[in-house]
Image (cartoon, rainbow, N blue to C red; front, side, top):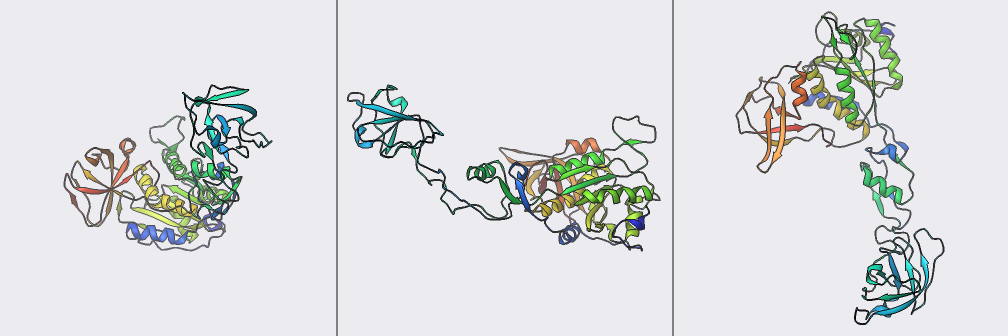
Length: 424
């Protein structure tokens, strides 16, 4: 299949477009994307997703008055004077366990043995913990008085019918799912996780675990980018290595669109003779390529592909450039498709331990190590800045953001930092 045969594309030549600043490129991406359509999902499948409705409670929580302790349900007036010197003796007329369907009623002058969570019988207005008694089964000796209503969980004291449990846009975590389950919700209307297809191109690439020749390298990018997409909340599909043949790339891309809400490629977008991604997608006519004023990650491409206009991100091939580009451009896109805000990772302020220089007119993302101690937030730049240095990238847990108009940062200066590997 040739480039012109990619479904939904139009042959022709798309001019290379200068994409300008990082902010311009982010805005351009977000303006082209819409949140995915929500649907009813099982509770556990919706973990980390956004609710797309105000959820109103259909019932009270607790659903009935129930005991907060193992003990004895009593009429408060019968035990108000109980003490060790003057204990109260009451006959035990029954027992109620949690989950018991029969509801007891009790008369003054008697008591019912009751378990935690069991419904409080009619006529009882306090529960005496078993520790305040002799544990009797026929007759119980009570040597300490509760207060009126003590150790009873009242119906609706947590949630009343009609209460709004979760507002539209709430991200579902374990606590929210527990709340939904407690009011009987088995499903929730939420946006799905985007399906992200990750493709690496290059004749020099080899799969990890296979023999490596003197002119080849292992494919690290597709694993790294697929992991980034998964960490951002997406479902990821890592495609095997694609050669530098245009027909091979076009055919692979066409095959993958059926399961993609987003496609991410790495490599093949610069100005070389074998930049297959740029070659094929330029002829497709709906993807624009240009240079973003950033370091690393200057060559970028973005557009749509296929009959469903699937967004496609073409990232540089150098590992650090690919990683930073994904963090800056693809993570906000995934969050927008999931309906999660904020789209961009909020920066934090930290004192830098070392000075650094930065090219004029470019936003630099400096790999760094971030920590917080009693003295506040501190960040240490990692010395080397080569876009191929994966070892240094692995050591970093943050990116220092040096603005376009700053060319020098002195030690001890407050800088903006993107702290990686944590949720927004």
